[in-house]
Figure 1: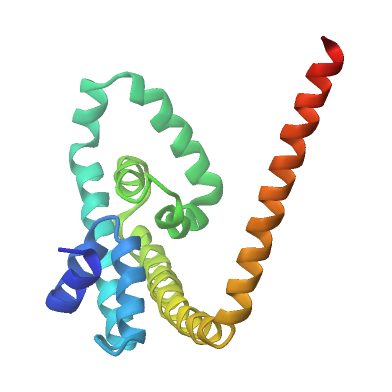
Figure 2: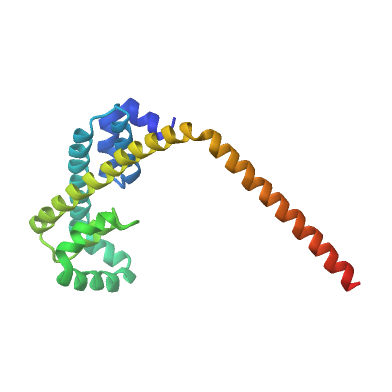
Amino acid sequence: MSLHRFLVEYGYLAVLGGSLLEGETVLVLAGFAAHQGHLSLPLVIVIAFFGGMIGDQIFFFVGWRYGAALLRRMPFLATRAERVNRALVRHQAWLIIGVRFMYGLRIVGPIVIGMSDVRARHFLRFNMIGAAIWAVLVAGAGYLFGHTLKWFIADLERYEGVALLLIIAIAGCVALAHRWLARRKKSLRELGD
């Protein structure tokens, strides 16, 4: 079953599940499905906002609750956690908002932030802002992608004859260039002998 088909069949439940975890792909496809008329874009955005916010809040509390045990089991993380803590002191709000946009840090980021000195209420406030921006941008990108794809396909049908001639011309030029280079290479070898 394709991810797009999964979204059409399970719709908003798939959006919620994907948003709780690293859900950029699911959310882009949900935006695309909204453009196709299978889902409602405003509802996709609202569900993605709540899913993203709740997911990151859960990961924050995992770091808050189990962070010390993680550091005891993996002492090499202690120096990294100290560096993250220092960065959080200087750029706390921006880091909390932006962590969901950093590839590979969507789950780990809130856990590390939970291990820091950031208070849960403070994290929640900026987590909500980040989730709102993320839901609108990513779902909107999927929706706009659907619009652009529809426009591109319509134009492609209109100009497919010209496009076919252009492809044939390019292929012919490549074949002629390849043939010319092969002959030139052969003549240079014959001169060298």
